[in-house]
Image (tube, rainbow over all chains, first blue to last red; front, side, top):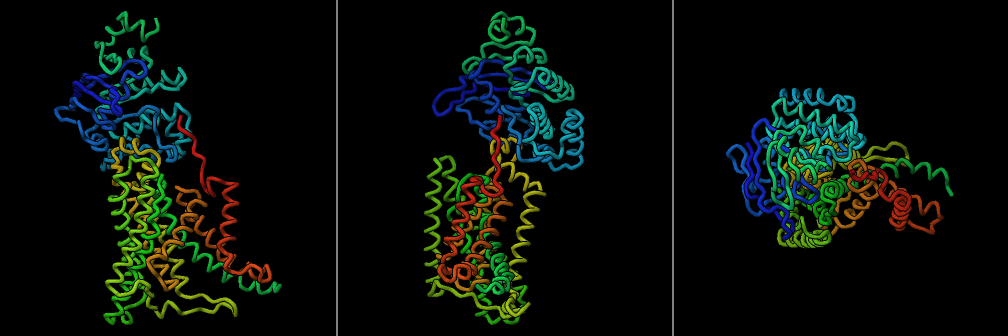
Length: 234
Length: 323
């Protein structure tokens, strides 16, 4: 579905990605693991058009995405939940969700997706008229994911959904991610919490200093000695 | 001190203050909306405002020259003026952003500010040049519409002109429409989303550049309408007469909390009232020691005081940093 090849990205001359290659098949959850600064967030930002690559290819179902601005890539059906959630604090929960459906004009289908999101996250329904800045961290993460789902995306990019959340909330969010995937959305997940990520992913890639050093199924990665030592805390 | 006189003139002063205040409010919106989206002070906005006044006077002089001015009903003429002023100022604001600000979007903050000051001077002298060639004069007088100068005497000391009512009604109408647009429509929500987080907005599929252009357009439209109302109310305009009202409207925007739309409205009205009351009451209350010419000193002193105690402005919020 999505294939990334030989992706090179730099911030003001300093290289961040040195030829990242990865693929995501329809219906999968693919985890992108690695330490801080390995290039996980940069990879997602480049796929969604927030960053422009120096070289390399990003192809979604046969269509190249390189060079397109972020607001056009959204139209291809890629929704990106950025690091740090980036919800609109001064907008209400409902307005945030409706912004997620901004490029769509099918009112009936949008209403259906709103119902679906509110069923997935009942907390958001309770807070629907509230200004988003007043939500708790967990609720804000739910809102960020719900907002992305309002696009009815083919591919969902999730950047650190567990960041700053209590363990019980992390578990809840990950269960929801599995639900979303079962309902037919393909997911590319960036996560510091490698154990959680590998528990729900089908496949994974390990990034180090801007290159993929390891790839495999979730089970293979969980059994790999290097992965266990470096990312699973053994 | 004649206490009765102070009471008698009160409604008149209130009315004058409101007229001035609504005018400041309309102009202040242009500053505050652009600041809200780009955190940038568009110093050319005072000229975008006065260009609206010039568009209006040109229509009026054109109608007068063609001999149609007395034949047309005055509300139609007024509507025509407003639409012309709004269109010209709105398009000018968009053009200025495209040419003078957008290429500098990623430059250090001081750079677009300098560019804005340059545009401000450029527009002043451009208006002067064009009007000098076209009319051989750049101090222009709004032809009077007789119906607008009708005055109703409410009491012996208070009267209201049709003009004043028109200015207030038009300004209120525009503020109301803007409120609906920003708070009740999808595009308005997108403007607020872009104001808060441009990158996140682009991830929603919002074309940030289009929203920024739209913001300049709306600010210009409001400024242009204010320009026409300014011309109709005060009569005499020249290419430089946008500067002081522009500066005051900017102050009003800061007073209300820059970036905050209801704040700009409130700040404008508060500043207008302060000025009108200072102009009428200072001399009466101080036995002539301080005349009406001290109105700006008084108004701005109050302003400084307010900002000392509320540095974010009357309605400015202290926005919590994102976690």
